[in-house]
Image (cartoon, rainbow, N blue to C red; front, side, top):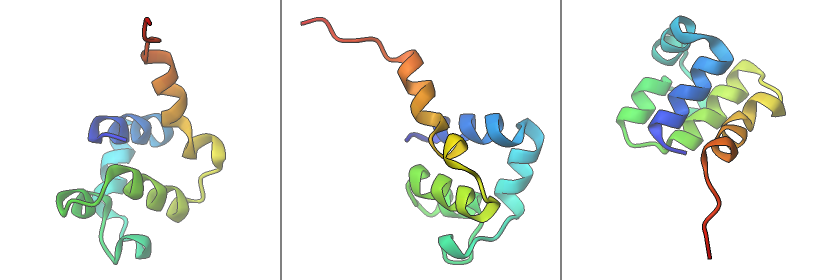
Length: 80
């Protein structure tokens, strides 16, 4: 997962405004007491941050794997 994918799924699940607020305000034990913004700035992989956000907010599997669905829509099959 790239940073852009992280922000895309954050906005899809939480909305544009709330996702930014959540990323800056919610301190998560799964990120060693950091917010998503702090964890990303410290170099924690976006996938790990997304998992921590899902755990902290009680997201179901549909939200947890949302980015995988989006990637299938954008990626084109390679020609052999």
